Every structure is written in C-alpha cells, then in structure tokens.
Length: 490
Image 1 (cartoon, helix red, strand yellow):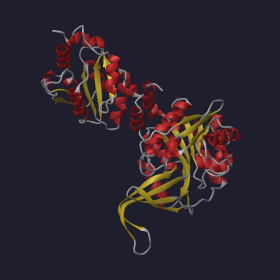
Image 2 (cartoon, one colour; image 1 turned 90 degrees about the vertical axis):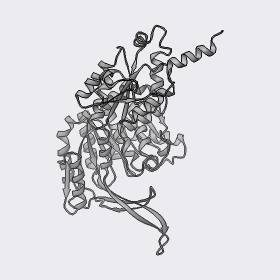
Image 3 (spheres, helix red, strand yellow; image 1 turned 120 degrees about the vertical axis):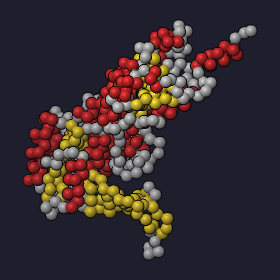
Image 4 (tube, one colour; image 1 turned 180 degrees about the horizontal axis):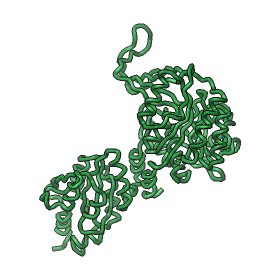
C-alpha cells in the first residue's frame, strides 16, 4: 500500500459498519503481584492491587473494531443474569445498540476470571454454559440480521463454541451474506468446520488447523498442505492461518501462499491476537482493500497486541507507528495538504493535540533535532511544514537548497519526533496553517511572538504559539562556512 492509501483508509474507517455475531463473554482481570509461596500449599500468593472487567470472546472483536474507529452492530444470546447485565452496560457505554442481544432466563453468561501477577497469567477460572441455543432462538437472530445486511459492509462470526453459532445458524448466516454480497469472515472453533463452508475467509490458528485436517503441522510444507486442504474442502475464497510468533500464512483461491512474518519486538501474550486479525482484515475488506493489503495491516495489528498483556486492542496510530518502524515505510509520514487535513481532523476528534512547525531544514544538524524534539514534547504529534525547493531558492538564494525536497522529506520523516511532513510551495506556511488548524504553532526563540506567521489564525480558534530556542552556534550557514574554510585552497 502507498502512504496515501494507508492514511485514506484509516480516515474512512469511521464510515464502515460491521456486524459481529458470536459468543459474547465477560472477562475479569485480577491484577496483583506475588513475592511468596503459600504455607498452605505450594502455590504463589497474589496480593491483589486492582480488578478490571472487559468484554471478552466476540466482545474482543467488537472492542478491536471500535478501537480502529469502525461502527459496530452485534447479535448474540446471553443469560438473563448479573454477568449478562454487565455485558449490556459495556455495550451501552460504547453506544452500541443492544437490540440484537437476546437474554435468556436460566442461561449462564460466560465469565472468565484471569489472575495476573507481575504481568504473568497465574490462573484462569471459567463460569460458563456450552448449551447450544435452540432453533427458535437461532431464528430470532436470523430475523434481526436479515434487515441489517443492506447497511453493513462485513459480517464477522466469532465462534468460541459456547452455543450461539450452531450449525443451523452458522449456515443460515453464511447463506444470507452470500445472497446479499456481504463478505463473511469466521474465527472458527471445533474439529468439524463443515458448517463454515462457503464463508469468504476463515482465520484458524495452527493448532486448530492441525486438529480439523488431521495433518500434524511441524513444517512450512505441512502448513501449506493443511491450508490448501481447508480451502478446497470448505470452498473458501481465502484462509488466514495464524502461526503465533511466526506470523500468518495467507491462502487465496488461484494464488500462491503468502507468508507474513509477525512484526513485533517482544511477545508478552498471544491471547486475543486472533480477534485482532479477524477485526482488522474485516474492516480492510469492508473498506475496499484487497485481501493482501488487509492481511498486511492485520499482521502489523497482531504484532502490536501480542506485545501487550491480556486480550488487547490496537489503534490506527499504533499500526501506522509499527509500519513506520520498519524503515521502508518512512514515506507513510509524508502527506499532501489534503491528506493531512483529513488525518488531523480525525486525530483531533479523538482529543489528540497537533503541534506545527515549519522551515527549510536544509542540511539537518543537531540544533534542528533538539528543536524538533522540544516541539514534539508539547503535544501528541508533530506536523512539519517543509519549504519546497523553489520556496527555499526564493528565501535563501539560487545556490540553495543543498539537499532536494524529496531527500529532505525522507530524512525528516525518519525522525521519531516527527509524525507528519508536508511540503508547501509558498514563501510562508500561512495557507498550510489555515488548512490544518494546528493546536500549537511553534517557532524559534529568535522570533518575536507578534512576528510569527499564522499567530492570528491559530489564536482565533483557541490555539497558542510557543517559542523554542535554538542551540547556539548551530546553523546550516555556519556548517557551510566551516566546510568552505577547511576545504578551500589558500
């Protein structure tokens, strides 16, 4: 994907609607620390510090979709009990309609309790019912889903084998989606996948794939054989086989297998990574990405969440950041004016503070770096307006710039303290500031505040101007003079 495609995709995610159906659970996390062994039994004693309740199961798919900015609808069956009421409270707080959540008296809502100490899971306790819903309840789910399909771009089935996605319901949902032209993605469970036949895509892990195909997976060749067997047996359009710390394999009808190594610095917890993959590929297809690009985004998203403890979610910022860390994607920070306008609009809607500064930055030196680091520390992201080559010539003379605009853009985008770079042709950044509406406008300490271009615009909507001093003696002109002094013949 190009930089423009990545940014444009995450901007339009807010308009996408996903329908999630599956086993909705309540996840309880009890956090603490352990420093001693119990005298009563050879087990660690956990001193509890705090407790947290989250949506689990299909709820983690929902949380990932919300974190990515997507609109979500949900259909499920839960118990008419205290845990079920807590699930409804979570959905209501996330402003998700609960008309598709069917509560059944006498049914136990699945509740998983995880005890963690020193960032390690010590114990999990499950309270659940695995009883399958009857045909009458399945029909209620179908009747809710049918009128939703014209208004959603993707359906995600999150099956934890807790009784919601029965054979009848699953087959009916896949048939409805195929008739409506809505892609249906499944995170499967169990040893018999026949009920998923005809789905657009499945996301099993390595262990699940081995169990359902009967092929022990000990090598890459085994992965290929098992993946192709599932593709053929279930008439799938595609299959994403997740392989924990090894990444994922993507199978597509009529194409060669694509291996995507996981992008992660350190693995803490792989639980919930499958939900992240399902959600990210789902909105990728819903947003018009081809499957390869959607899988690449999902791979980066999975790399983020396995570096966190517990079932976690990922944000667009985190995905973009990990893509940028690869080095070959520095260009994703370099934006056109209109691209950046849309990106900042979305970022500021989430409460993030945009800092703006500008300059020629010809022959980058330590003074520039320290200035940019201080500017970045004032907010959540630093936007750098960069004078184009023609603009630099008008300001600095016909012999400048020493380094062209494309190379200057890439060098600046490679800095951790710079989030976005935008070229402008004018002599001043006034038009760019008026387009972007940054929260904080930064200039060098050698300026008088009243001389700062764009000050009136920024202050008119409640922004402010900050002045940051440069490192004494550090300038491009000084460097040029030193080079001439040392390398020019007497």
